[in-house]
Length: 239
Ligand code: ADP
Ligand code: MG
Image (tube, rainbow, N blue to C red; front, side, top):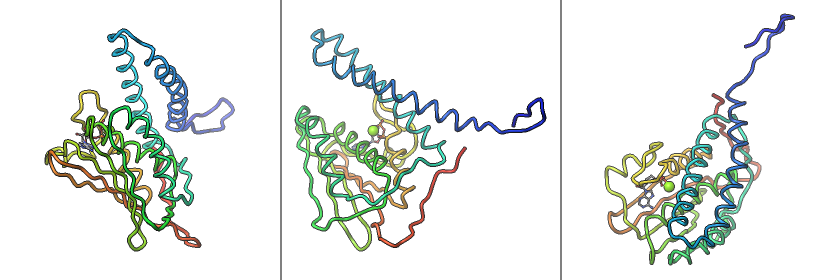
């Protein structure tokens, strides 16, 4: 609270200002990332290529941190609307096809025959699927298999992302969703905690099922969109 010389008081919401600044930092980061990605294929020196790749990873890390901060602090920039689960999964498939080919990973999609609609912030749900796909790609190495499938049971839509990668041991399973928990040398440990929070903010659930050394499936459950149904929209409280 600030009192001016003429006696009127006003309040500065520092959390809002910080969120605004953090949000603005994203744009230059995105530009830097884009240019780095353009440069990398032309780098013939193996060392330079490695430096640039590390720089890219670190940018991803900064982006994860920003994402986490914004999720914690913003009151609501949540834009929910009815979204077709199958359409969204098809878009994600398209986005990841080239990466799958590059890494020699077979990316498969199995869509439900129904066309489930969910009431979500599309960008946030894309972010969740991106995080799960990234983890799956990192777990399988090359010649692996990653599958995205959709399903409907009752009034719930399911999206599963499975991989035939390393699987997850019990201690890791217990800590997966804890912010900053990672078993990767340059991981952030934020992907799953952010994703779980997003899904829960959409009145959904996120579960994991894994067999060590064999496979892992992350499953998202989201309530189906029902027209004329005033759905409860949950927002993060401001700091
Ligand atoms: P990060 O990927 O930065 O480590 P995440 O929150 O995305 O952070 O994941 C946390 C941890 O969960 C990972 O470090 C890894 O140990 C484990 N994990 C997540 N997804 C998978 C998967 N598909 N297969 C095996 N382990 C996984
Ligand atoms: Mg991750």
